Structures are given as C-alpha cells and as structure tokens.
Length: 68
Image 1 (cartoon, rainbow, N blue to C red):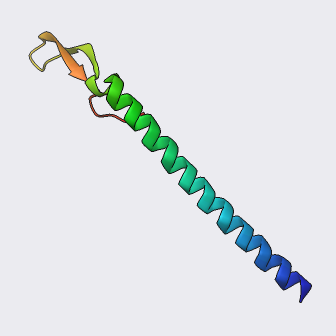
Image 2 (image 1 turned 90 degrees about the vertical axis):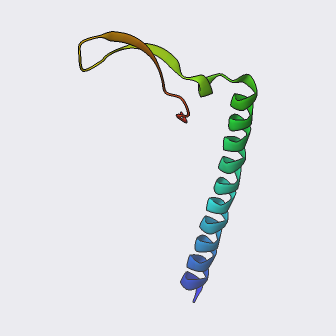
C-alpha cells in the first residue's frame, strides 16, 4: 500500500513539474518574440549571394520569418 501511495505522489509531482515547465517556457518564448518584434532584428533576414540556374549571381534576402 505504501508503494502505491509513493508511486501516486511521484506521478503527481512529475505532472506538476511538467506543467510548470510548460508554462514558463511559453512565457519565455512570448517575451523573446515580443522583444524581437520591437527591435526588428531577425525578422528581416540577411542578404547572401546566390547563383541562379543560368549561372548568374545575385544578392537575395534569406531567412525571413525563421525562428531560432
């Protein structure tokens, strides 16, 4: 009987821990997203040289909207 009670408390503790982690990770992600939106940093991407199928080199903006 004690073993079952210990197992139940352990399972409850694990569930509560996972819920806490889920709530705090969501908050951190929202905070980092809102700070990136204000600064405008990573939403613009970066300019790199690319080669078209005809062999012509051009500069293109890549990485827009990619979440790191």
